[in-house]
Every structure is written in structure tokens, then in C-alpha cells.
Length: 227
DNA sequence: TATTGATCATGT
DNA sequence: ACATGATCAATA
Image (spheres, chains in turn yellow, cyan, red):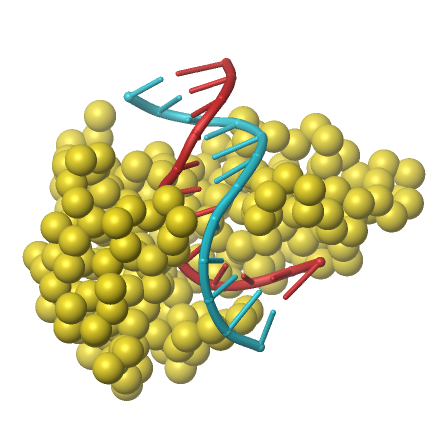
């Protein structure tokens, strides 16, 4: 078997995700008949894909949520021994053309983050991949304050994009939402609008949620210490 | 050690 | 080329 069937309801999805908590990636892989790579260096998406299969997410669907009928996006979250996120979370590509003018309410970012099933996965250095454990899942919808904070970042960043001032954007901008390169390698180019309205070629960028944002989400839900 | 900028695999 | 899934590795 390569994966489970998609849960019919939100309650079933949550229940299935809850059942995964406490199990190791090795156990999941064995149950699904998938080999465990020695490390993630050449297979960075392995953990996410394993959880997709275990939960019955639609595979290879583009520009669609992982569970289209439920409107739910699945995100695994690598966490340290204390349960705090180790990495930022990729959200989506930054629109550099006409889509760049979309207001927050209709933006790609907001759609992606409308309803997310976060699944923490142990990722402490030194713990072998097969022995890493899955944590307790969290189904999340942005609270009004979270939505407003993300909107502020989005508007600040996208204004620069719209003005053709992409060069002024680096990962330091944005309180919670940041923009960073997102490409197979540094020579990839995509079309964008320049400062004088002309078409230019530039490195594709992606929106990422800072680890501090996801840390706050988990802390609020699980009552972890906020250090 | 946290963060930024670069990169890996796969499918359409 | 761009979407999915992210982590790696150099730097601050």
C-alpha cells in the first residue's frame, strides 16, 4: 500500500492524525511499505510526503489544498526536543506578475493558511530518521489578531513587489511572514516587473512563515513555555 | 545558535 | 518552468 484513502470528514481526518501521534517515522514507513532514507540531504520532502500518504492526502495536486473536499492544508513541522519549530515553513510562491496586486483577502497566502493541519515531527539533530516521533496534531485557523499580523506583513512586502523594488526585499523584512528565494538553484529565473514597469528576469521567491510564528501557535495550544 | 540565502527530489 | 514537499549549510 502506498497511502490511505482520504478521510471523508474533518473529524475523521483529525482522528486519524491523532492516532499517528507517538508513532515513529520508521513505523509509518514500514506500514506504508516505504524505505527510510539514510538522511534527508537528498530527499528533503520525505517526511512531508510520508505524512501525506499516512493521512490520505491528495498526491501531486497543484494549487489545491491537500484535502480539497475539506479545504485543509497539511504541514509537517520539524520540532526540537522541547517541541519548538526548528525551521520556517514554506507557504507559497510570491506572485511577481498581475497576481501581485491581489488584496490580502483574496491572496494566495491567505487561502493557503485559511485552515492548516499542523503535524509536529521530532527533528532534533542526532535522532535517526526512523526513530523520530510524530507529535500531537493541531488543526488551525488564523485568529483575527494572527490574520491582521500576517496581513500587515503581506501588504508591506507586496507593495515593494508591485513597485518593482524586488531588490529591496530580503529575509529580514516581515515580522512573521518573510520572502526568501525558492528555486532548485541560484540560476533559475522567472519573469517579474521592474522599477520602470519593464519586464525583468529574477530568482523566484517564496513566502515563508518564521519559526517564531509557528512556535507561538503551538505554545498557545499546548501551553508550552514561551521562551 | 538563529537566521538567511541556497538547494534537493518529484510530478505536471 | 513551476508547483508540491521542505531542509541544508554558510553567515551573522
